[in-house]
Amino acid sequence: MAFSPDYRTYPQASAATTAAVLDAGLRAYMLRVYNWMTSGLVLTGIVAYGIANTSLIDVFYPLVMTPAGPRHTPSALAMISIFAPLAFVLVLSLGVNRLSRSTAQALYWAFCAAMGASLTNIFLIYTSESIVRVFFITAATFAATSIYGYTTKTDLTRMGSFMMMGLFGIIIASLVNMFMASSALQFAISIIGVVVFTGLTAYDTQRIKATYVQYAYAEGPEGAAKRSVYDALSLYLNFINLFMLLLQLLGNRNNS
Image 1 (spheres, rainbow, N blue to C red):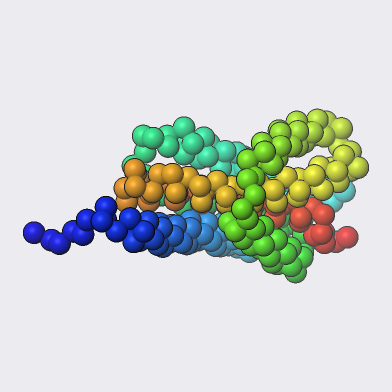
Image 2 (cartoon, rainbow, N blue to C red):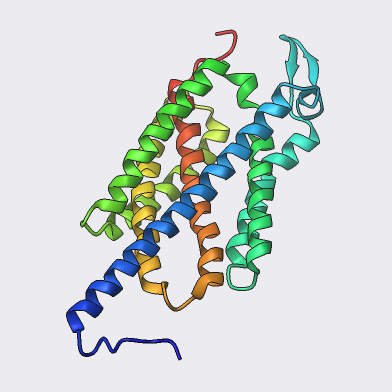
């Protein structure tokens, strides 16, 4: 029989040991989440860059003659790729309790690849230099905000609720602007969107930390592995949205 000390005799040692184990597990879990998120971003970037710099670009965005000259226009395949990530998010979100770990992971990779295909057009709109510059600006902003969310002792729940209301406002305003095509409104949406997704990054990081502590021993290794995929998805979406909004504000357009 393996020796198992009776921590009831040493309550202080028990509490210290439990806290140390929990802290080590939390750090390992957060590292796993960030690895999932980073790997997903790498896959998205590879797919987007690969399509934009090969003959596949003519399949997704063929050149069509217009009164203003030849112009890349989205094909049916491009339109499918634009809406495909939403379908993957819905499947992952609605199937959180039914999907196995391997299925959730496979859907996450498929989602990241589909997102890469949907972002191909940024290489047609913006210069490669500005895309790279804005990416690193986004990475620095995301890292600083996520570290704040992880280390702060302030409860960010109220801020998270407020940011979610702001997110719904951005979605509604974006739909309205599809018909108005107002550059001033789009600029305001971009500014507010940067604030919203920066706040959501801090909130989601704190939420992930809190839920790990809450479910650390209840879900077991299998549950934790699956949960890490969903948590990575939340941070991934914050990063992508923050990147796209900053690109609208700071990106240099081609032929401008």
